[in-house]
Length: 158
Image 1: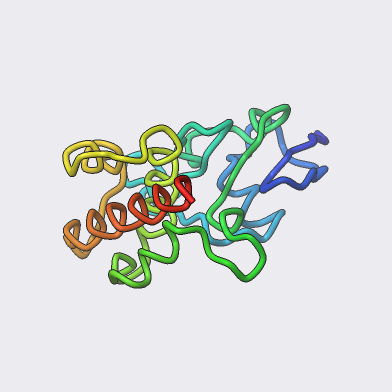
Image 2 (image 1 turned 90 degrees about the vertical axis):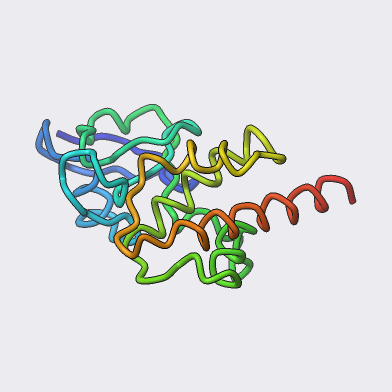
């Protein structure tokens, strides 16, 4: 079945079986491999994408649900060669660690900061709670999100 999907601002027409997962469509058909498969059960967050700004586990979503919505993957955050502040701060503060959870953490953080540029550490923890870090290094992730929030606040006040 052919469906039209708007991913990272670009309209794509893909031919997929009715129940093919959005995760597989993004990775296999659109070659957006930043979205990872961890557990395949919606528990780890490695496959996180934003659908109309909401955090979603793409391993649980049929690709057909991608029609008529705007999907953002980690590849869609940068503006050309300029990284999104969340991406940049994850690098600077070593929130990336081994990298498996990074795309999901970055997207969950972006969704939080789109709503709240001054989150508390507890609000950051809640926002990333659906994403498991196998390195157990949540401190660096939280520090990265705090730094991104500060940079985004400065940009908003400029």
